[in-house]
Amino acid sequence: MTYVLPTEEQQLAVDSFRKFLESEIRPFARQYTDRFIPKEAMLEITPALAEFGLPGADIQEEFGGLGLPLVTRAMLLEELMTVSVDIGLFMMINCGIARFLANLAPAHLRERYLPGVMAGRVFGAFGISEPDVGSNVIDIKTKGVRDGDHWVINGEKTWITGGHYSDFFICTTRTSEKGLSHFLIDREEHGYETRNIEKIALNSQSTAQIFVTDARVPHSNMCGEEGVGLKNTVKEFEMARPHVGLLSIGLMRASLEETIAYAKERKQFGKVIASHQLIAAKIAEMATLLDASKLMCYRALSMIDMGIRCDMQSSMAKWFATESAVKVCRDAVQIHGGNGLTKEFNVERLAREAIVIPIPDGTTEIQKLIIARALTGVSAFV
Ligand SMILES: Cc1cc2nc3c(=O)[nH]c(=O)nc-3n(C[C@H](O)[C@H](O)[C@H](O)COP(=O)(O)OP(=O)(O)OC[C@H]3O[C@@H](n4cnc5c(N)ncnc54)[C@H](O)[C@@H]3O)c2cc1C
Image (cartoon, rainbow, N blue to C red; front, side):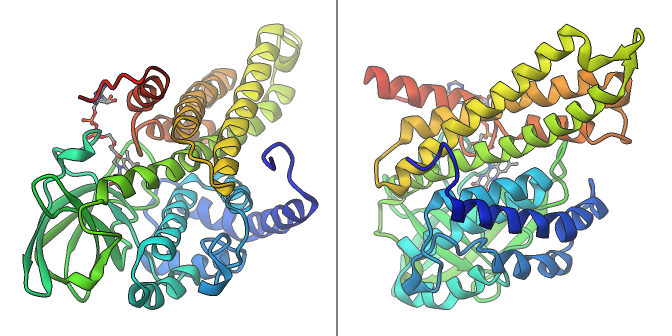
């Protein structure tokens, strides 16, 4: 498996991407700390990110991608997430969108949207969650009613990453009493409205409500077969969860880096705090949690690359990495003492960001129920 150490080629790709991130993306992200990046500004950086393979790295060459393993793309995403979890999250969604279009969209939609997404000029989003539908995806209320060659779709989505930036979104829609289906809804062509949601953190990118009112969407905009939307959503989660874990890895890496530098600089009781054994132990624990999280996330991603189903490993990686980051980023604040609570130091923001990540793509509680179901064969969901 390739998740333990990068190959020489992967390392070269990561190194050159890191240089680009330091010179271009870090200063850009700093400019927008806790401030919303307008779409025009986002469009200034996304074509450059696309040159490095985000989001097209893992897309089949026949569709214009680079045909690289998912793990290689994940290594690039991890670097981006370490510099900016906001931009990393937004790009992660568009990576998922590119793969969804490549694997599930009919040819006419793939040909129309995929090149723009891979070039970083067109943005998509995934609309699953609704005001009354979070953990219970099966209860989706957004409804499509067939009308000849079209479907008339009505509903409200919420917490949608990149919603405000989106040119189109994949709408998980109820198309029969028991069946869900996916539609590609275009903002201009079929119409939908978005409204941004302010949160404790991650406000530089968009988390949005989406309102769909009497959108007439052609039947040919259905992605995947009619009625199998739940199965396809579960498959999407399998891939998304280790990626959400990567967001937390980015946060842990950034926190640890700041903490090591601070602990080697700050003196108390006549010596640097890194030499106090309780602080040293905390740093060792932070690094170990980060490393274990990385192994778990890359194991799941490697399994997907190898075509091995890994819902359980993906859930393990998601809850472990995201909850580890909450602890690691909190410890980073603790090691910074009072300074850690101020805007002068990044650890305050990293700790706020870490709290957000255990929630999307299935909460920690839901991941544990999935893992236990896989082990016992007994489902807590029925
Ligand atoms: C930053 C961010 C980005 C997001 N991006 C997207 C996106 O792009 N697209 C999208 O569709 N959605 C997105 N979401 C929504 C996200 O997937 C949901 O918030 C998540 O699934 C939880 O749903 P909920 O918030 O409604 O919580 P609820 O489902 O209401 O859960 C509330 C609490 O109850 C617990 N709980 C629920 N059911 C059970 C159970 N059976 N057993 C034990 N505990 C339970 C939960 O763990 C949680 O602690 C995003 C959310 C966030 C915060």
